Image (cartoon, rainbow, N blue to C red; front, side, top):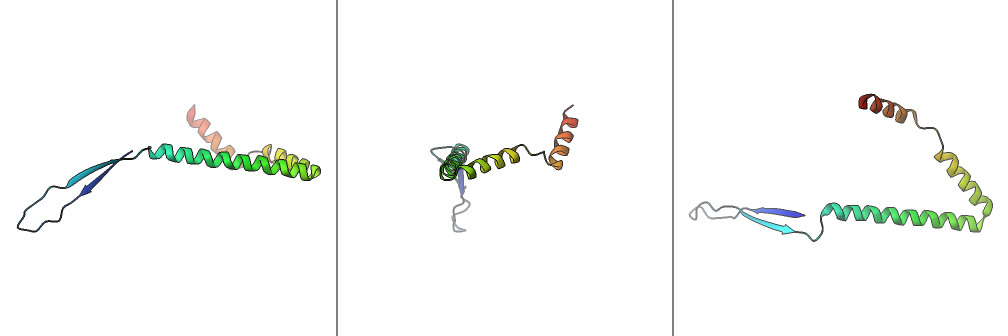
Length: 96
């Protein structure tokens, strides 16, 4: 990613007008790829931590692990919130 810096020189009145100086700096990686890689890394770490936590819970207490899995199943199959259904309906009506 290129960054342009404009420097306006300070001059005395007797020297007259001096044009601004432009300088370009090029970073090693574009900012967008830095941010995408950071987000991917954080998601990867969170996923590994969740899987590890579930594995530890399941090994420590099988019944608690089963309840956790059942709760996750119930929550992931819960009905869609009303506002989300309205939004999807609105978008479908605009699409067609």
